[in-house]
Amino acid sequence: MANSNGVAIEDRFHFDLTGFVILRGVLSPSECQAYLDVLGELEAQEYEDVWLEAKGPGKPTKETHREHQVRLNGLPRLDPIFDRLIDHPRVLPYLKEFVGQPQLINTWSISKFEGAKQGGRHRGVPTTDYAYRNGEIRSRMFNVVYFLTDNGPEDGSILALPGSHKSNFDLDWKQYEGLALPGSVTVTGKAGDVFLFSEAVIHDGLPKTTDGVRSNLYYNYVHAHYNVMFREPKNCHHFYFPPEIRQRLTPGQKELTEWMELARWEY
Ligand SMILES: O=C(O)CCC(=O)C(=O)O
Image (cartoon, rainbow, N blue to C red):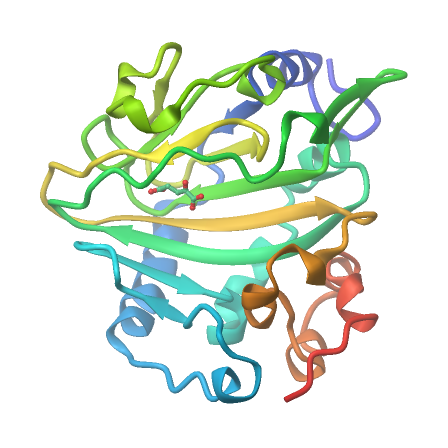
């Protein structure tokens, strides 16, 4: 049974219990291929990042410092194909239900190849940024991960700790390799599936031991009361879309990026 936002009670139960849900078959094989084709072209390019001269230090558009891995930051700045995932109709009800007043803060892609190592366990916000009050779930930061390729157990998939969005004590995460951290699970899925999680959940990227590429897109949202430009000053360039990009967005996408009308980011 779905509520007024169109989210089933089972999904609310599962999200509150674990900190995440997986939606199956959100993107079709041809949609995944279209994103992969564009991503392949973008990953092959180099970026001048002239903004770094005025605003640096900051994160470059293309990050290759991790072996066998390429990350691109600020996707809609790079190609308009990425606009439509800002408010995907299968995901939007969950943004409203689990964030409240969602605003897009960050977008990136990660492509991993054989030999990519484990990343590093982290959470984007503390457990105090997840709440259930008066019948409402509120996640101050929420990540939407689109799988463009299969994410199998050895494909460098995401590791998550179910329930860690409300865990009461921490361990020394660095001491534990891969799934050795008690309670860890590998989040597996097929190309086209979407993993939605509270950024209070402890997570990581596992090593990739298979051949081929694993590519995911990440759309990260915060509640409107969160100070977006204060979060990571070195990353503001990738968070913020200038008016020439926002003017091509649909009304729904403009609503989810409304904070950008109030921010200053000239250089
Ligand atoms: O997909 C991965 O490799 C891990 C991604 C991740 O943990 C992150 O981007 O915060």
